Image 1 (cartoon, rainbow, N blue to C red):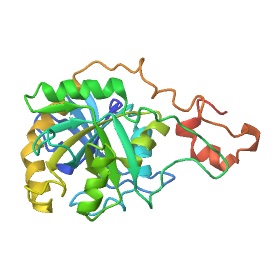
Image 2 (tube, helix red, strand yellow; image 1 turned 60 degrees about the vertical axis):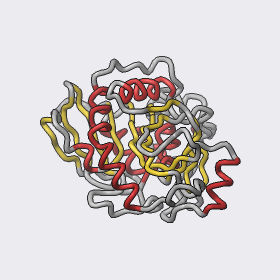
Image 3 (cartoon, rainbow, N blue to C red; image 1 turned 30 degrees about the horizontal axis):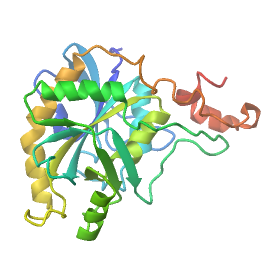
Length: 288
């Protein structure tokens, strides 16, 4: 059996077509929440086992609202992943975060409407804390890893997740700016919150592809803009991932590994056996 992949990457399938990734294998997993977006690809990078999930499936088959976020995160947990690096395209809501830049956000606002947001329910209630929705320790490492590539990278900013798949109206974009949001995208929620429920460290490498539609002197966002910038930034993302893989793992100063310790509120005697069994990979260390 191969070594456990403790670092997980969620993003486009192009991220794992990278030099230096060896001994690859595919994992076609099932979870209690269905199948992930695509078979998970694991491989050795910089001496570490890494697992990759194509968020939208290879060929970009799933819209942001169709992605099975629960299955993707649960599958990574099953494989032994402890840290998740999400690579995402986003629009900028501020002048200084320009197209082509990379941002490591520190806050998240969920403006989606129709997504499954939690692993819990069915007789087991958990109120997980997400005051800091992105792992601060891991986010700093990701920032350092991107900075080492020479790319322009910013640390911090509030990321608002919209339902999609359409882009924002100008009124919406200006409202998000008035709220103090820095970035807008379609996939960070509920991905980050599910990672916290799974006690995984989660950080986002957000690639700014456009100024959304608020910037009247710039062209409104288009699919072509998004794809062009992502293609240009693929090499940077791949190098940053390799840099992260070489960094020491430090999970002792973040809230992630024990996120469920004080979150489970249901009387254990009242939790259905089927629910306990279903969520054993998440709660097994807390409930017999």
